Amino acid sequence: MYKVIGTVTTRAFRVMWALEELGQPYEIVAAGPRSEEARKYNPLGKIPALVDGKETLTDSVAIMTYLADKHGALTAPAGTIARARQDAMTLWLVDEFDAVLWAAAKHSFVFPEERRVPEIKPSLRDEFAHNVEHFATRIEGPFVMGDTFTIADILAVHCLNWAIGAKFPVENAAVNAYAKSLRAREAFKSVRAKAE
Image 1 (cartoon, rainbow, N blue to C red):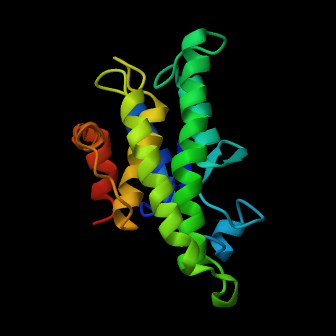
Image 2: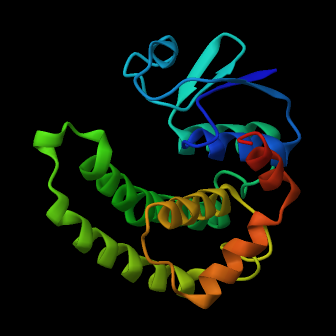
């Protein structure tokens, strides 16, 4: 059984959602960022981490990629054009959604107050809104990669949910419809229920 280090309200949600989609059992080891518990699995105290047997993996996207490859689902096969396109989308989402949201979080509550630059947040909101519009043009079907649900969808919807919580604009109707349809998935609802 896998162990997921983190909480449902963090990027660990992505890993849990992937595991639910894969039908894999897992145990949650509740740990906040930079906590003593998190440092047992990652010296930097970053979450999530995944324990698979004797191995510990870090970074939500790397963990999801590993799980998808290992279980042969949620991804196009390695070495294919479809996989290269999926990886390009995943990396775009990390750069243009996740990184923008993370920069805003750092300047809202992560950094010590004296290092925060709150004046940067409006430009990050504008950048995110622009990126949402671009993302809308890249959705190829019911899922971002077309007819197949992949880890790119998990990453995208998690970031869109994060944006809503951070009061970032998600005003594109197509993007909102896409995210709403994926929030209706049983695996998503199962993870969401763990937060209640």
